[in-house]
Image (cartoon, rainbow, N blue to C red; front, side, top):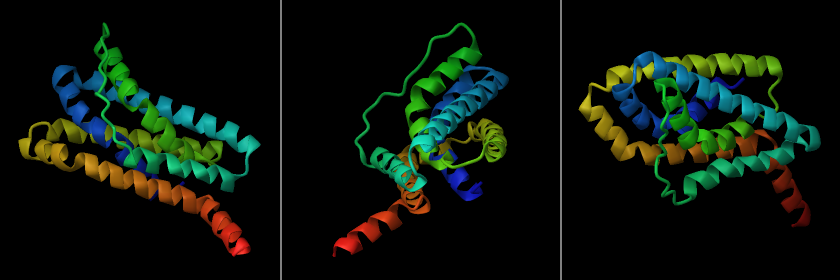
Amino acid sequence: MNIGLLTLTFFAVNLDFFIMLLFLLKKYPFRSVLLAYLVGNILLMTLSFGAGQILETFMPEWLLGILGLIPIYLALRDDDDEEGGSRASSPFLAVLGTYLSVCAGCNLSIFLPVLLGESLATFGETILYIGALTIIIVFILKRVNQNKWVTATIDKYGEKLMRICYILIGLYVLYDSGFLAHVFAWISHFL
């Protein structure tokens, strides 16, 4: 388990949703926001881990390193998507629906290559670590929600920071999987 990579990935994937969390914390009870965000994170990470296990059965790890191009693509694409919302009868379902509609694609595509190759035991540790980060960030955002300067700064620089993190994550996955070593070896063989 690479704590630095997991932390960077968590913040990169969720950075844009932190703004949404500020609004959700104003609208819904703290407990509902916390639990829905935690359940959403665990659900999407579990789906990413499961998909990675299936892919790993059929392909070598170095070839799956090409999945590192997904976060790089997401960082470089022009994303004009509106942040989704959800109407639900309970605050928990409203927050969970909002999180899944806004973050499912990014979380699945970014966490899949990061979780690739992890054992079930390591994945359990990863879930505990990401769960702890999730809880900590909601408590921090509850406090931050009272500071207008911080929210203005995140609004101004959050998108750029998120894109830089996605590129770093993608490059790490390409390198760590051995994909780049295979590509460079292949190129040098032909040159």
